[in-house]
Image (tube, rainbow, N blue to C red; front, side, top):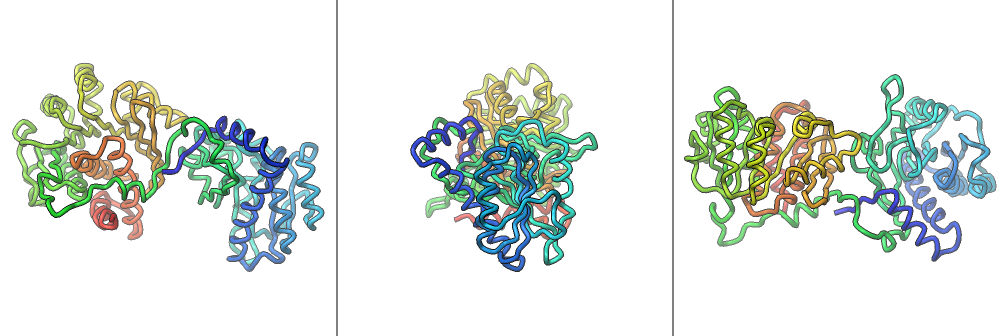
Length: 489
């Protein structure tokens, strides 16, 4: 897992490290990594020599990083121009280094640009871009390089204008993001929240983390962690010679109804793609489920389903008294449960919410933003991680807040952010598949927070795989899950 650190922690670590090294060392390390990444990008666009590079330079250290990186590129023969947004507060030593290397200061962007370095504002920025900077950011899409392709935008540490600690992005009066949209972000020393969560993460593009020696100086606990494939591979249950269907875990699925049989079929499909050895279905769509998945044992009620190691409840269940009875029966079982969709709507009923809080076994709830609002009485807001953790503490449950960067939060304050999300999953039924997979992971014995984080990660990869073939439907995601899971060791 990759740790993500808030601005105050990064600032404290930088101060501690700078006290042990000569002045300017950290900026030179950052500039070296930034220039290296730009040189690699330019190599694919005709080479560094004579390549037109534009620096957008704000005040302070972020602008200094861009200027020193530009100086390194200029010494390699690049044609580097610097547009100074605050000439009276420019980093003087960085500007002198750029000029000494052959770079020049310009009053407007050149006609041809291969790479733009966004050094307008760094982790100390607040409240979006000022008017001139916002106009420049909006114009970046119009710049073209020597090859006729759009200029590659490289953000220095973070895209300028984003709210670094939350990942929020302010909007202009016309509704555009008031921040730079980067193709690549070269981050220094540590991942910051805006590179991993919220709308800002989509503006960061590909994130390249440069080691400047900061890690030993980062104290306390990270804000949260970003999952990697290796984490899921380490956690995922493995089969052994003695494995059989019951030792692998049995998952119960109480989803769907005569009105919404597809929800049952999809959630069972998600469960079958997971690690458990047997799926028991209980609900009003048993005929459709068995027709589609003949290995499933199907009954009409949760009370008749038999023994399971985890329950999935809610998708397409309905909100009538019969559905509420099924949910009560699920909550009474002393096993982990996943509550999704209609189960979350039913939880707004005070008696069911009280039963939920009295449970000892793990609970995972999987709201999207509108369901979160119904549960909490307020929207998640700008800080999605903080909102997830508040709901997790209040419900005493693991919360999986769905979105482009799904957040998993625990009642004791730990959080994970999923990096594999894709807008292709924004279609009906994909959440049903996710709930089924999550229940399968729980039934196999995985702790609730790991099961939730792993399910989000694998579900995101399946969405990406399904999108390769064109528009995505939920059955496509269920099918794509199997080869994704098959790649696990």
